[in-house]
Length: 200
Image 1 (tube, rainbow, N blue to C red):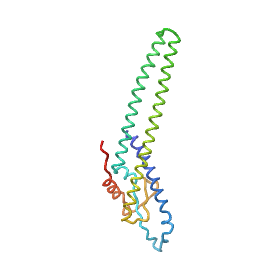
Image 2 (spheres, helix red, strand yellow):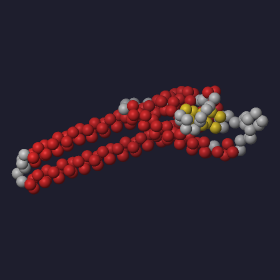
Image 3 (spheres, rainbow, N blue to C red):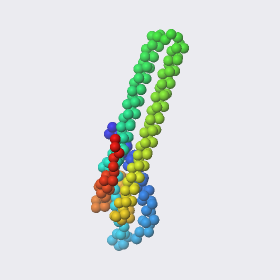
Image 4 (tube, helix red, strand yellow):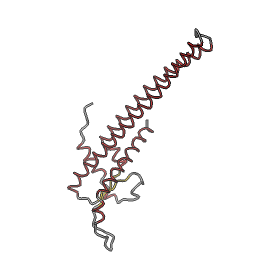
């Protein structure tokens, strides 16, 4: 389960980083027309960064989406395991009957074999279908999460007036940032205030 959480959080982090990159690209014109740095290296730009991993861990909406996906994944696993065990018993029973000449005729044995083979194929098809549905839902959740964060940042930045807000995931984008420019907790607090969980 921890591995699943890690994978889902990783996927969400990648998607959010991509979303922030798109936002940064939208602000490219402002960055390109920013004043050149003066002798002491200051350009007068107002910059901040957000740690995406930390945001995803603390943002209630992200946690709720993650929990929904984990529950669905567990339900899928349970369903497939139950069907798999039932099919395995039928295969063992077929094998036992076949070895003990328990079928009335070779044709009847062949029919039973084909029935079991079809069930195996149906189970594989079901697994692919459910996995596809889970992946599609996860992708939808990632887009919802990205849109939620982006829309909040647009409102948030009206008052703050940052020229650039950079996303950071581990060491992917930002190798060092002065903690004074880290607005992660402020963003998480604002997002969580705005978020209203749906009634379960």
